[in-house]
Image (cartoon, rainbow, N blue to C red):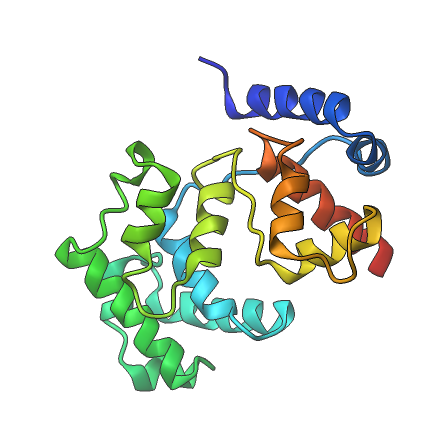
Length: 207
């Protein structure tokens, strides 16, 4: 069975052949550096924490929360041991503290089964995890891509991805969802890798 790195290489070769615009992106960005984060619970927790704040602010708050649970790591049990007041003291909003507790509680009582999601389809995982308050489809798509290594995910509602596509492809301004999905058919079944390159191109242009 191919490793994740080997599957990524296969995906890149497919994208180079199927899409000349994507081929230019690949040449410009270089090898795909999509690395997997195996701690599924922590990834979901940090996704909640990062919502609607800057990357720098999210990193600062994350470090404070991690310090609160030392020498433990972030787990359902360690998060449930923290009160809303303690989380607020670390810079977490009341609503996000409630979301984190809901995630931890549902992971503990079996409402969500993170140990089993690897055997589920993408849509099954989305239905399972969006039972948690504060977790929507986009957050689960990030888990699919960056933790489970699913290569066929196209987060069509991601604004940065839409902007990157609008800047690189001859599409409507702004492109509609149907148009984006049609464009992504040339990437199938490796939409995740194409999306990664689009994000990197946008970062490069903004820099």
